[in-house]
Image (tube, rainbow, N blue to C red):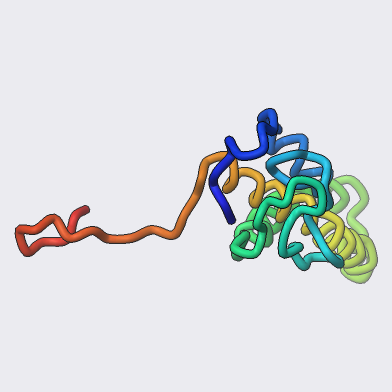
Length: 136
């Protein structure tokens, strides 16, 4: 993903606005995805190269943390308040976890891509310091 934010004279776009709306991190107007989770090759509005955009497993980890916290809290509250049988918990929480995970995946992925763009994230590299030891 190109880190040249100055090209085209685009004003800065907040990743917290572009991400949840699944928009281009540079212009905030073009669609980020071509399909459900497939990132476009480039923005159809500003031409930003999105071919290198990769959020990795980050969105899934954040979703597990958020949904795990919410569902665990709700399940504990339901258990203490109503003491239902286990099958009620399965009926309540399985759809919430499945729908919540699918519903949050796209905006979380887009937000992480937007944050990578804003902070000019790149692949980490070790540089040789010249003294026989790798830089730390």
